[in-house]
Image (tube, rainbow, N blue to C red; front, side, top):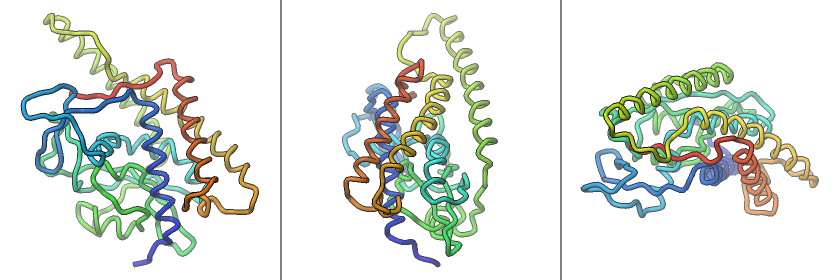
Length: 276
């Protein structure tokens, strides 16, 4: 099993840190109530019997990253491709989470989840897994080879079969899913209203979510290009982002500023978190 350069491991870790910062910008602040259960913790938007306000930063990170892997792969695809200058593949892998934020109405008794990552083919033909949302499943190791990722986290170990997605096809599927959710939520609102139990308030808006993440993809790609052009000392991006330095700090700032611009570009503004 080929070992991964520690610099690439740190690059993967840095992209995860940046992605957390981006999510904290584009979503309204939300600290959920949680209840311990098998495989992780149940989440709720309100205080209920057995639920307590989340206090551990590790669990808060798990919640923040929950259900964000598809968006992360779409948004960071261009940047990862520019960093490595080679083909990047969007890849879904069935994994068994170590610890996850669980919605009561979506519990999978087998604890199997589809997880989207980016695969990069390195010069020695090792496939590097770039996984900005690993924390949603309690995964902590960074910059794993595909072989080790499957062995450690795949539902069938190293016999787990990754599913490769064409980026544009995946994006179209996300758009279709967004439209279906808009229709389903409208039907749900009408049903509650007919019963006289519908209470207006902050709600998850699938159409605004889709639009905002498209703006985000564009703004971050533009921000990366401007930042990259400013590295004039001959250093590679991997070198810069794999250690604490002025270049890495400026990269973080460029990405977070790009996220702020994306929120301003989107007519819906910041997004509320969808909680039961």
